[in-house]
Image (tube, rainbow, N blue to C red; front, side, top):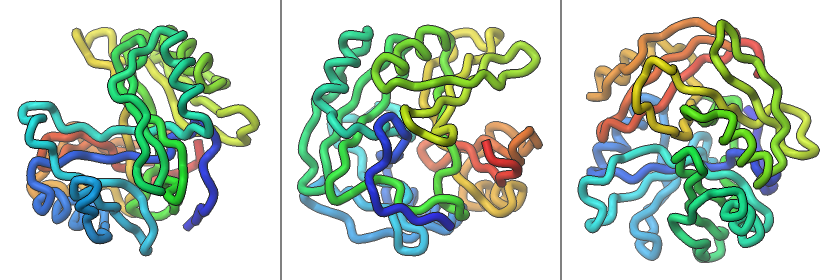
Length: 261
């Protein structure tokens, strides 16, 4: 277990949250699959609450707003920013679109949502009292975040302009995939890859992967809790992974790490 108490370096995936049509059902699902506990909902923030592992925040859950009926439920990934207004200007200059302007979230921090030129939405989080992920390398915590997009070249240029990403290509067999490191970083912070060319109209999307002790056992917990298995467990260079979906059909990955990325 690695605990963190300081704000994440700019550009690092630092948080992920989900809006749920039935928060109670969703909380029970992730409790069963990932072992999460939860803090008390915050009425001043629409009932938003933190999912906890060992008492430390690992993700966020909130009720879906009444005016968002019919909007797909997805895990939203947030990238850290130490100067969110400046980063917002860079997003627009690089061809991105603002979906939600930066707002104060009490004393917790500031957040906004944008869309990159390939169509993927992402949040930015400027930490105040809430740094984002406060524990890693333990079951139930986030193991990895990445962007899969039909136009990975444009995406790589965009995020390099906004956050200064440096890339290392690790794709094999014609599959485009690169890890990215933030400026002054000493390890990969996430990845950007190309979607399967055979998958027509595949959307660009940031995805989240949670760590589990045993992927196969976790897949069974997903089924038992009413979720769906989108991709059966398979071994790859960095561990064993499966893609599953929760109560609102929100997809996410689960993995048991092997060698570090």
